[in-house]
Length: 369
Ligand code: SAH
Ligand code: SF4
Image (cartoon, rainbow, N blue to C red):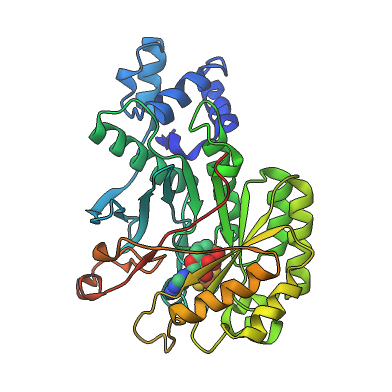
C-alpha cells in the first residue's frame, strides 16, 4: 500500500480507511480532530491513539500540504500565500481580516477552463483540478499557521469563500468532501452559511450541491441579458440565464431562509448603464437575493476598464431603490498584489509576478450567523 494523504479524506472516507487498517471506525474521529482541529501531521504526537495504530499510520499514510512559494502580508492585514502545486503551477490563498470575521479565499483549480472575458485566471487556461487534500490543505495550512503565529488556541478563520482560482463546480468530486470537512464538527465546524461557493453558473452541479451540501451560493452573473453574458461568461451559451435563474430558485428552495448572492463585475461602458440596472432588477425579481458589485481589477491585455466610482454608486442606487440589498466590494491588499484569482499559473515567470500591479477586492459575502 503506498502512503495516502489523509487530507484527501472526509470523515466517511477516513472511517473506511481506518477500518481497512483493522481498526474501529470511531478512531477516524480522533484522527480528524488531531489533523484538522489541532493541525497535527506527525502521527507520533497523536497521544491518545494506540502505539500500534500510530506505527501503521506512519507506514501507510501521511498528512501533507504543499510548499509555500511566498507568504506576504499587506499593510491592511490581508495575507496571501502562493502555493506550489507542482509542474510549474501555483495557486493562491488569501486571508482577509475584518472586525467581525476572518475570511479565507481558496482556489479549487490551477487555471480555469471557463475563460470569462474579464478574468486573467481564465486567460491562463486550464491546468488541472486540485485534489480534496489540496483544497482543504489551504484551510489547514492557513488556519494552523496563523494560530501558531498568534499563539492562539482559538479559531482564526471564521468564513471560507471558494472564490480563488478555478470554477469549483467543474471540480465537484474533489470539492464536495472538502466542503464536508469545513462543516464537520470534528474538523472545522463552520456553519454552512459561513462557507460560500462561487460559480459562473454550472446548472447541473448547482442542483447536486443543493442536494449534497447546500452551502451559501454566490453566482457570477455580470450581465442582465443573454447576448451580453454569452460574451462575458462563455458558459452562458450552455446554460442561458433562464436555466440559471431557475436553478437559483431551486437552490434557495432546498436551503430555506437563504438567498443567492449575485456577483456583478463593473465594466466601464459594457454592463454598467442605467438601462442595464433596470434589466437586472427585473431579471432577479423572483429570486431571494443580494447583489454584490465588484469593481473590475484591470490587468494588461484585458482591453477593459473599471466603471467610475460615480457610475458604480448610481448603478447600486438603482438596485437599492428597487428593493435589492446591494453591496460594493472594498479593495484590499493592493500592496501585495493579491487580486481575485489574478495570480499564479507559471511560477517560473517571475517577471510577471513581480511586475504586476493588481488590486484585491474582498468578498462581502453571506451573513455571519
Ligand atoms: N469561478 C468562480 C469562482 C472564482 S472567480 C466564479 O467565476 O464565480 C471569483 C469572482 O471573481 C467571480 O465573481 C469573478 O467574476 C470575479 N473576477 C474574476 N476576474 C475579476 C477581475 N478581473 N476583477 C474583479 N473580479 C473578478
Ligand atoms: Fe473561471 Fe471564475 Fe475566472 Fe470565469 S471568473 S474564468 S469561471 S475563475
